[in-house]
Amino acid sequence: MAYIVTKNILDTKDNNYLYEKGETYPRPDLNVSDNRIKELLGKGVIESDGAEGDLSPDTKAESDLSTKELKVKLDELGIKYGSRASKDELKALLDGAEGE
Image (tube, rainbow, N blue to C red; front, side, top):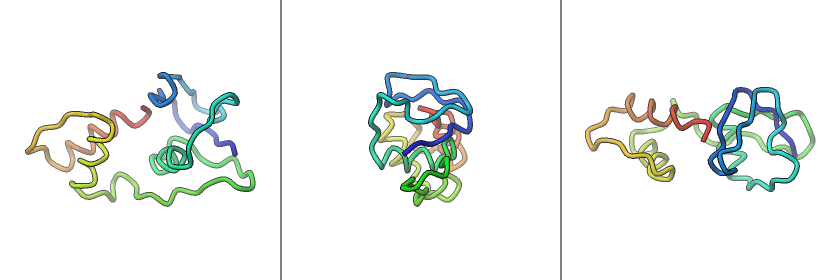
């Protein structure tokens, strides 16, 4: 299973490894969970290279997430937000962490 990086990402799940657009994800010496692949596919930062067995994004796009779902994702990433943050503010925070 290999994927192509669609925009530069700093992968916090890979010791802040910088993947540049056009590179293969994951790098050869790294094992990545299916959940991580689906997460990055859902964010649109990687795409299938067409190989058999590649996963497809079955997660919601960030634009389709509810406020509650956005907060859950931010909590999972350890990102702080205000209790009265709007949906757009939450999306912006998540977008900022997109490549992490």
